Image (cartoon, rainbow, N blue to C red; front, side, top):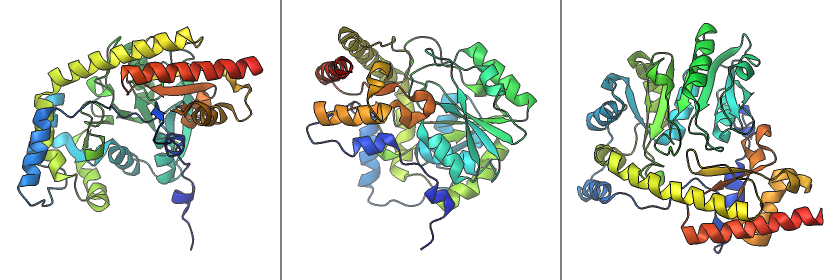
Length: 378
């Protein structure tokens, strides 16, 4: 049987590949998966929907209640809202619906691996743009250097996966102005927008609302990863244009999740404030423990990841991939190799602080001790 290029051209995720090798005893600093409970009122909304005993299709764009809740949350018109089967589907729709085969799409390097893979699935070519070393900020000069006549779109992600960085407003504006001058539209993944510990999250939709698509959801902020509910927002004409793809890929998002979405956004402010406190504390704890073990680690800024330089340990043949595999084998801790986020991530490990304080402390000690031993052995 012939395998289509759009399937054979997908690179397996290092995040899943490493995580799938974990043992029952492993400490997971791999998946970006909060361990906190779903808010009690959201749980009740989910249970109430299930208790009805029926689960009919919803309208393709989502229920009016769910769409209106997102519109009110973001301060936009409901006509510019589509409810999606999580952020991943939103990303897929945004790329499949706006990019043609032969086009080029700029993606952050390092960046979430789905970006480049979904660009390939659309028949286009992903082109990495470098982020500022160390701070991982946007650089208009670096982006301008890779723009060609084939460039159609740019993927933006702030707070960032894997770096945790937040794009400065001035840098973002320079990039948006550059893209507007070249006729390039933006696709902004803002799933981590509620996890900001230092600085301010700025969306491109704040200043250039009609030049792109904004993607968000409840997976991270409400620990609803498995309930798969997100949204895409943009100009109403663009949302209507994407409706057909959405209709024939998933029909509509999960009805139970849509029923819970308005409740989640009603309790959102207080809930995410509590979440931020928890993860800010965990980020600092992990930072302290890693530093005690001799590893560099920046202050937690956004999301819930530390992107830790391990260049000395990259003496291991195979770089960060081999190092992450060895850490799992010898310490029973899941970490994600930086190379899994692009060549710009080589020499780093991504550590998610999404487990309890006790587990974080133990995992940090194991990882730091193992890396120190690798360096010592040379």
